[in-house]
Length: 537
Image (cartoon, rainbow, N blue to C red; front, top):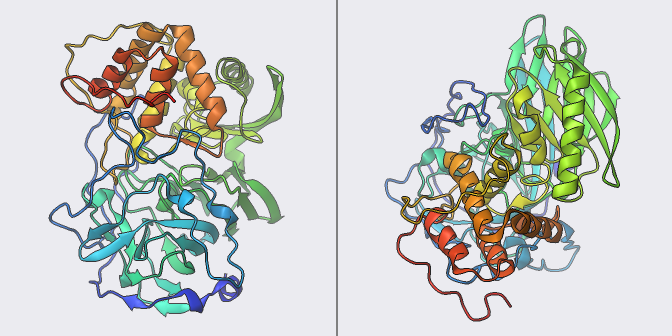
């Protein structure tokens, strides 16, 4: 990492306007918990935060949103097929060029705690994680290459570890310049700000070094030192709690950004062989020494990395022909699961057949699954960790959620609701007409720094799609969603406004569709405003 750091420094692009901030220490994480449809019923969140944070007592955030609520337009000015092209930037020796299309779904520049915070476009991450099993300690180093947008300012990103050392463009800086701040949703939902004024469009590197511990985020987990010098490590991501995507372990951006990750992972003094489970391309460099390469389409919610004692897992792999498409797969079963792996495999492959037929092609190069009695039920790009009852639900997310991704945190309700409508036994593909006298409900939080999927996405969200089926017909709704899936693909992203527009326009421009979004997605009373004349093109 030191050699890499020296190779990437770019002093000419740094404008050193370093803001003064307070120092502090980092908190340990809260209790470890598993989350799935069945165990996500608690509406309370831990207030655990990184104690390096400087909190704002009032909401100083510009709350203009990238999407609009049934106003007839998507305020990003783009359709649902917009993709992030950030990773193709090559500045060479020429002045850097801005790439505004990379920021289509980004939040606005924001004044927070006296700092001019701006979104950035991460171009790449190169990281190493080392686990000393005898000493029961872990360490990470990471190099972040990023580009500023058309507005200069102080970069926003997140990391839920306590930074020990930092360098900006090869120059040492104090970790106290990279604190967490409240952007208007509470400290637990906050982001870090690099308190250095950087010029528009410039490209920079940020090198960080820190001990790896349980993340300072609600219900964090995934790092467990086991008996006999063994380890269980799991990225343990979640969309239900802030700070639980990649930022739990490595610096990360918001869901709209895509960038490659190159990760070296090593174990030393292991008391037994360990197995790596990941959706990355993996090279085994030696015993307990792996190099993982995640593609340029990776987002903060994409990467699955598990390290587990080899004696605790068995696996089966193959290639499944599914409606004209061959899907390579590897399925791991932890020994806490009583169901035979052949039965689990049959359930998974049957789900593949349902989803390729009803939704479309599997968009990933292969599928990786991990099933454990104590596993989190969580989706990743072409992968899952799950308990046995949730296999179908989590597999579907490789089509919706980690195939077609939400453009922002606030759009995460879509894939959970659509998944529940497709996979809930006894409640899939139902027709449930809207009762316009029912109370309003919010699925989409318009705050630009909202960062969790609401818990009512599962039940209420499913009913929203059941109500839309009453207006469009089940077949009409499924066809409309399949068309959207095909149009967006893996490199694009879906906003709530784009979903509303698509269903309204292919649904015969039925005003009840917009009214459903207005009342039961945006939580507004009264009647939805009429769309613009060119709303459907």
